[in-house]
Amino acid sequence: MKTCHLWLEATVAFLVIAGASCLRKVSLEVVPEVVQRGEKVILRCHYDLENAPLYSLKWYRGRHEFYRFSPTEEASTKIFNISGINVDPDNSNKSQVTLRNVDFGLSGTFICEVTADAPTFSTASASKNLTVVSLPREEPVIVSERERYDPGDMLRANCSLPPSKPPVHLSFTLNSIPVETTTRQQRTKDDEGMQWSEISLTLQPFHYTNGRLNLRCIAQIPGIFSKQSELHLVSGMREPVPERVTSENGSGTHTMTFVTILCLGMLHLLLR
Image (cartoon, rainbow, N blue to C red; front, side):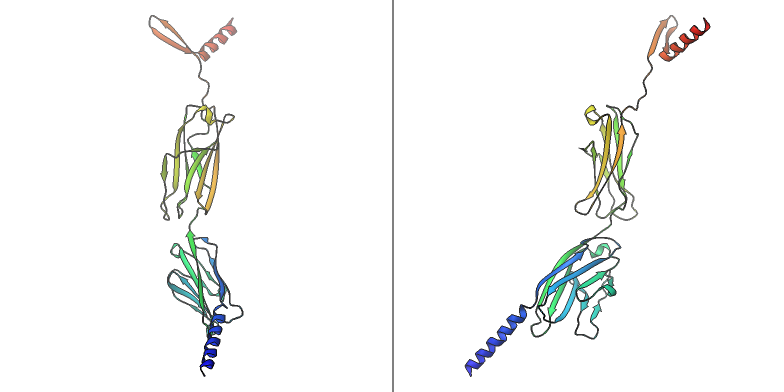
């Protein structure tokens, strides 16, 4: 009798162990992991039941369950009313859930929890982070005081973009050489104006390449966003300054430009 009980216990233990091994390779895929505010994201739960039946697939944002798929129940899907989570029921099933119109509050950890059916009801879960952003859709805009600069001039320029969350990092290069910004203003909330940076730099001959200046503004959010714009500047803004001739007499100093003298000389030749 004792031997029979031992055999029964061993059989049950074997079945439990065998059943427990039926659920494996649970992983969560978030597409995309970084999503633009107002767009959709697809959460896919990958798992291998090794031919065992599925009891339930539960979805959590943090500790809050917002979606459940239970094939053994009369209503196989259940959506829980969680503020800010908009489930698309037509594109959600036993392996994925689709969220529409995502907002910043959804940034964080999502979890899928898989449970096998009887007799084991073994459970395993996987988690992954989602990041919701608001990115500028335009390239940065560079504005300079003028288009031509000579060595010794002060180059003043700024680079701007609409608001974003997270804010972008704006940097400058002049002929591919990094230039430090002198002023920066960044806004992160909607309708609070632009985010911008500016530079003030006294130009030296070594700044030029074939008489040209290539000013580039780079807007970046590491790993998420990168756009840049260029502004081409040239030297030779100043017009030639006419030579001046100064003569002195008893009444004081009289100054005539070289152009005036030249015109008087030509008039004198015509009247001869």
